[in-house]
Structure formats: structure tokens, C-alpha cells
Amino acid sequence: MTCIVSSGALNSTHSLTINKDPAPTCEHCKCILTIEHILCTCTAYEHNRKQYFPHPQLSHILLHSPKRNIFNYLTDIKLLTKFLRPDIALLC
Ligand SMILES: [Zn+2]
Image (cartoon, rainbow, N blue to C red; front, side, top):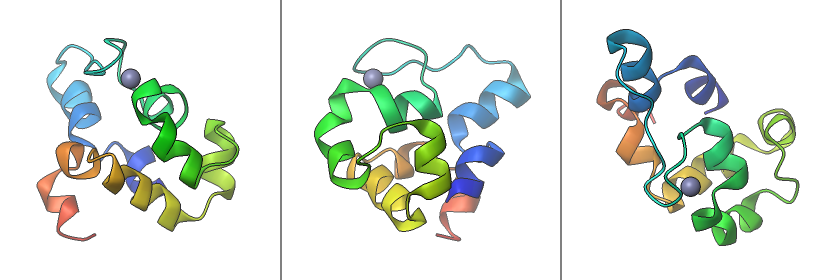
């Protein structure tokens, strides 16, 4: 999962780098949607985040959290299916 997140396999980041589309924004906060925002700071997912990440710093999550927690968190907040490229989603 960390590989998927960091490799740009998400639709939003893929589209941004390939097509030069405008940066995607968080539908809740209206700020630029980044992996750090999703995993660490978005207030809309704070309740879900506390269940999976006791230390909500990006480096700690990516280096020390069980990969299953990242996968389950993204599934719970329904962002995994929304932003993951279909060809990658088939591998999960
Ligand atoms: Zn947000």
C-alpha cells in the first residue's frame, strides 16, 4: 500500500503528473488534496484516523504503521476506491 501511495498510482496524482490537470482539492476542506492531508490532517477523517494511526505524522505512518492499517483506513474513508487507478485496484 505504501508503494501504491508513494508511486503515484492514485488517479488524482497520476492525472496531475501526466495531464497537468489542476491540483485536486479536498471536498471537505477545499485545500489541495495530498497524501499527507488524507493520512494526517483532514478533519473529516479524524475519527477514522485515530482508530488506525496513534501518531498522525506522515513519516511515522509510512514507516511504522502496519500496511494493513493504511489500506483499511483508506477503505473506511472510501478514498481507496475513489482515487485508485482501476488497473491497480484489481491487484488489491
Ligand atoms: Zn480535508
